[in-house]
Every structure is written in structure tokens, then in C-alpha cells.
Image (spheres, rainbow, N blue to C red):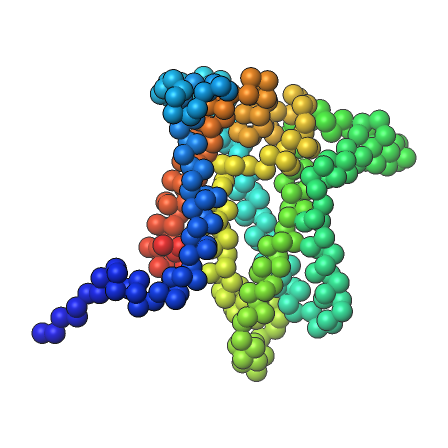
Length: 309
């Protein structure tokens, strides 16, 4: 029985030295910008002092994490953060795939490119401008919504005093602003699908919707899984700019709009305790890491080819 001799690491490095040399700048970049800053995690376990170096600060164990679980809002903040992000991920991908499929079926190149540009344009709108748009729409006294309602003899609505309504508003405005980016990614994936599949389907009598459901959507599965795993990795990070700009310091809306990022910002913007802020970041990172490992494990069991590792 023949046994294949296993090549060692040094042999592999020497044999592919040109490829590894080309990879070196990328490795150095990630080492400096992504891995070296991870030393700062130690801030979560020390008493932060401005005039003391990191490893000379007093070690306090898990004390910096206490402001999260002693606040009594950790579960609420976690549920809000995960709930909003799940809505962003699920609805965003469904909307992006649907629009990308419809655009791919359009025949007019000029209209297709114009529609794609118009849908992609909101992605470049800053959250500050978005907050101005939202305020001008829903301001109680002079907002567009209440102005129109008064013209029809309908009583004005105090939108900034209805926490439940903001669950819908935040999701809608986030999708309006960001779905164009992922739509372009899916559209690029669709252009890589061989036209032979569609020609064969047309010969068999398949209409546009049957071709999309039987060919396009299955072909986008790998792209969807990769984007899903990337999104789940930061599911606890929230969208601080979105929530802070749209809600601001309106305490009436905190019950449905407060996420972990905004709570930590309000709690620590006066004291500027680096240790507590880092503790919150560690909690978010560990939660996201555990979630992506679980989801990747499930995907690996269902279809190994779609898993990240």
C-alpha cells in the first residue's frame, strides 16, 4: 500500500514563496489594524486612568461589566439590538434579491442603469441628512405628514410620542437607505450566471417568474449565505448612527428604540470610562462570535460548500 509523504510547512512556504510574498502586505495590514488593537480588550478588566499605561492599571476583574447587568436593561437592550438587526438582515436580503432579479429581467439598458443608480443613491445619504428628512416628515407642528392630515380634516399624529410606531419607521428608513448596496452585489452575482440555463428554460416554456425561482434564486444561495454570515458577526453592534440620529435624546422612545450602543454612549459620555465601554464591546463581540460559529456549524452540516470554514 502506497503512502503519500506529507509535505511540511517549510516546504509549502518555499514551494509557493511567490504567492506568500504577494500575500504578505495583506497579512501585515490585518496584523496592524485588526489584531494588534485587540490588546485593548484588557481595558475591560482594569480601572481606567488617564495618566497610567494600560498594564499598570488596577485589575478589577468583571467589575466593568456590572453596569450592564445591574442596569436591569441588559435583556431589553439585547433583544432590541438582535431584533432590529434580524429585521435588517432578513428583510434587506429579501428586498435586495427581489429587486435584483427584477432588474436583471429588464431589457432596456438605459432604463435598467437609471433604475439601478436611483435605488443605489440613498446609500450615500448620511444619517444626519436622514434625521433631517425624518424630522421634516413627522414633526408634530409643521411636518409633512400632519400638514397633509390637517388638509383632509384629520387630527394630527404625534409620531415622536408613539414608541411602537418607531419599530416600523426605523426598519423602513434603514431599508430605504441601505438595500441598494446589497442589491448591487446580488445583481453582480446574477450577471455571472450562464445564459445557457435561461435559454434552456425558455425552450422548455418557463416564464420570467419560473426562471427566476428555478435558476436565479438557487444560484444566489452561496452569495446570500456569505452575506448572512458577515452580517451575523456584527449583529450585536447595531446601527448607532441610525438610532442616535433618528431618535436622539427622546426618552419616550427608548423602550422600543434603545439598543446596546446608544445605551452605552448615553451612560458613559459624561464619565468617559474606557473600561466600561470596552466591557460592553467585549460582550457584543463574544455574543456575535458565538452566534456566527453556531450558524456556520449549522450551514456546514447542511451544505459544506457554503460554510465559511
